[in-house]
Image 1 (tube, rainbow, N blue to C red):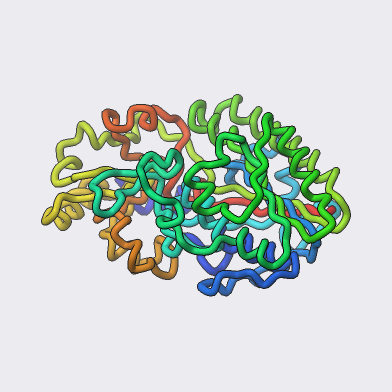
Image 2: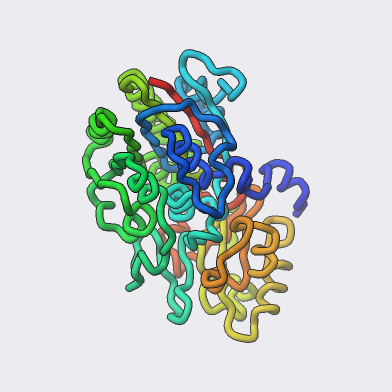
Length: 398
């Protein structure tokens, strides 16, 4: 297999930490609100000059990568027009930028980077599933299925806490089922949670929160596009229909913004469809099972935890077996190359797999026995290809 070809076709590259990544979004919006709220570990709040506002709505659409918007411009004409209207061409609709998700390009990691204003190596949400050090067990960070205190796992002050402390009214509008989730308590604490269904009611709730007399930030979340992409694929008509709904919802919000406010539309990652012939099954491949204690992460971005003493052998086997279709690194190499940001906090390094894998092209390492549901998904994400890594930041002014 030709690694160079896979790299060129997929646009494999590292996240742009410090030069336009998801961890830079809320520090920049905070600056637009007149609050110097960037965490001390970042210097990115002034990377872009967002238009000064008194009230802001940050609308996150799960799974809406920049490449997917442009590829499906006929289904999402409003979003595509915003994205193509770059920073040097501000028009009546607004302005679009392309940012990068961090690694892995997955929801739990990306939402944590947004909520804390920090790269993964600083907030510690380093993947979809990680081993909890000292337990020998994996934790799913969307389900929060282990007895782990969210405040201990992610102890850093969130951007919502910083903004509220500075006098900004902060509201989190999402599905009621997320109100007390571990992820909400870990990276969105500090915001007043407002649960509502269906999505159009959430949009109305967000507009109401923007009517606050004092400076305000509203975080609005939409998950259905990602769900349909996983189940039906981003090449399906069902996914395009969902994108069309999002397009109409964004335009509806933009046309009703109060004066002196802005709407910012972003995504946590993109997505690509993985063909059956490009799925390598770690549960039936005896080489990939050798020496492995736990298989974390997800199909496009793996954390591989080796049995004690087998770390070098596992690295060698995975490197050889996935030659040309993945970038395979030891924990130390991935940290040194900046996969998780400029560095990884000492207390969080053991959360990372002994071997870290980022898939190239449209390849995946599934686990048909241990991850029955995930292995059957059509759309996947997690790695550093352009389809997964590049996400929009669309700004519309009220």
